[in-house]
Image (cartoon, rainbow, N blue to C red; front, side):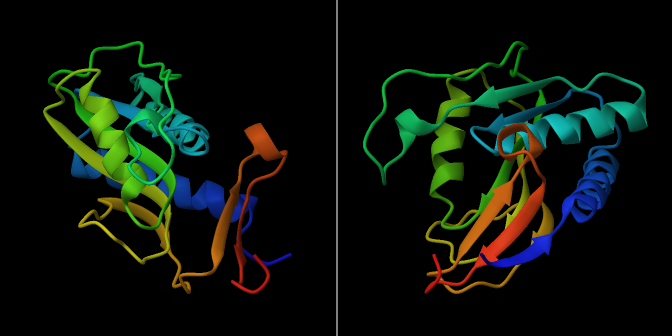
Length: 175
């Protein structure tokens, strides 16, 4: 089963803190857009964009990004399920994923993002950083850092897909 690291209340509070941190770091919402990495980074991104919109009183655009065609560690996928209905060029992009582990998804997402425009800056926001990077990629905004063994699994459940919000750590022998 695993240990619940964050329940729904913890996730809500963590995302609220991250929204404030992002807005403070960027001096508000001017030229700020949010792009979620599919699959579970997308609902986290929508929540962050919504929270920042509530705080600032200005709509923060939010899109979703499909990096599968740019992965170097999985079979190539043709097609693109990305939906970015706004201009990226010249914008401050907050790229969102639910977990950062090796950094390979983020690397692929950066390649995919550049196909949609040339942002002035890209910053990475993650709900959970579990360590064990293979690439020199670090999040700018992190909800929680959870030390793990390489064989452990972090499972992020989101209401949109799983019917509940939770972050669960499963030990390697249980995974």
